[in-house]
Length: 152
Figure 1 (cartoon, helix red, strand yellow):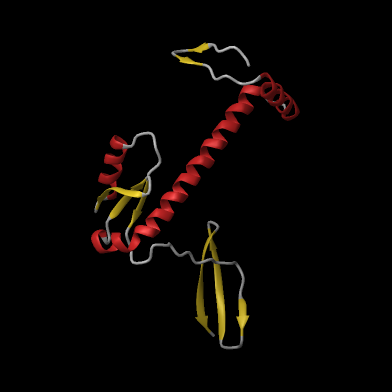
Figure 2: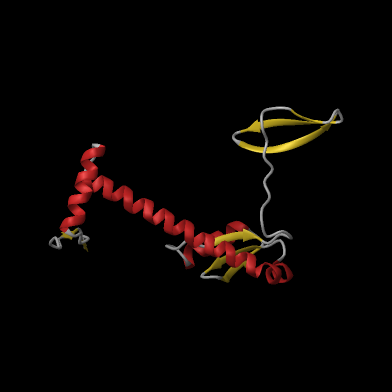
């Protein structure tokens, strides 16, 4: 193991010599510094952890949806660790409280609507003919889309 050193007021991370050598080889092939590669890898890992956490919270929201709809319809709710931790009709007020009470952890915030899943319509930049009665006009807006049916 490498020796532990002090960086500012925090101890530096310990990394085995084997991992450090592997990191250096990959960094050399990519033409970047090993510490930059390590930083990128750690940031990627943390983003993925956050995504997985929010996915679990989203699943908890769906499981709680019927109960939330009965008690908090139209309100914004905060889900953390699989449970309701706060709610408010005003999203900004809820966000301010969450910044105080949960400053370093991701918390799912969703509005309680009749359908727990959001629905997206996809647009395409082409006409599609389905019989002579119906044409679908497709318009692309910033990569997001919705399909509009036009009688023809």
